[in-house]
Image 1 (cartoon, helix red, strand yellow):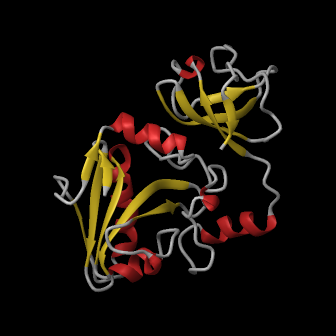
Image 2 (tube, rainbow, N blue to C red):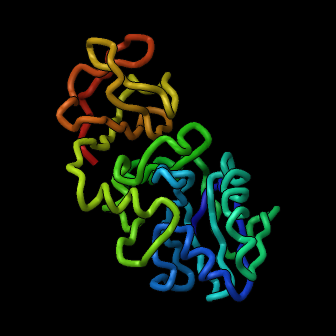
Length: 232
């Protein structure tokens, strides 16, 4: 199982671990298999993503939650608020267990972006909803599993709202100098989106309106080169 050198691991153990995590994570842990990393989101009560997790189900009483290191403490504290109601223990592992293959962060992130997966970090936590980043199409949200934190807002958006936003992948030197979480502007200096994820010259850009994909500018007023710019 591959993870990156920038990941940290929160291990959950105890007889109530499955029940505890089912109430917080967006996917159905009952359907995952051993030695398979299942994608999950932890959201706040407003339905915004706190973290994207890669969950390794060791057994029904033991789970590894793999998360970007810049938000591992925030993830830990978020879960800690709910853990008090369950018989389970949480520990932040200091070293990666031997059963993981560690990739360079640059390689991991590049692969994620090419696959249209926006991983959350300290620059993007609690900014986006799952639908902003297309998580509903990436087997990250299970709408049949029952309640989890933020589920009502996310389900309402899924079943009742007409989605207008879109996620685009861009490959261009014009994004080298911008940062994740930066605003994107139109020709009238109106904010129309954000940089969701990037590494080098490749990135994911969130736009509020999927029709607004021409004449985009960064915070310095520089125009994006949209030659290699397409919907995820």
